[in-house]
Image (cartoon, rainbow, N blue to C red; front, side):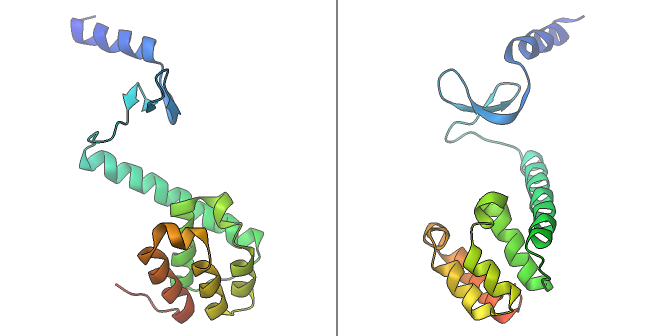
Length: 143
């Protein structure tokens, strides 16, 4: 084993590889083999693309669960809205939009859009929520 291989082995042994973000002993968000995520940390475009691809696949899968759980049929633009919300908030928080979900099931899209905007989510993401609510209401994609 050469010095580089030994060094890699030693670090991996001591750091442990953890495939979810956790807080290290100093409270720093960390993942993988001791990769710390400090404000200002850099990642490569390749890593960004892989993270986005992974997160998007999770959102697509969550959308399938969401549609099955609430027995709903969505057209393309409105499905894109739900996937966007799942991507941003996750499955659990998106499922808490009970009045929005009910409005969608009855194809009351203006009411669904209103319910989206009448939330802490809309306050948090502002313009994003406005754009998604407009797509929900009109069923038209905006590029």
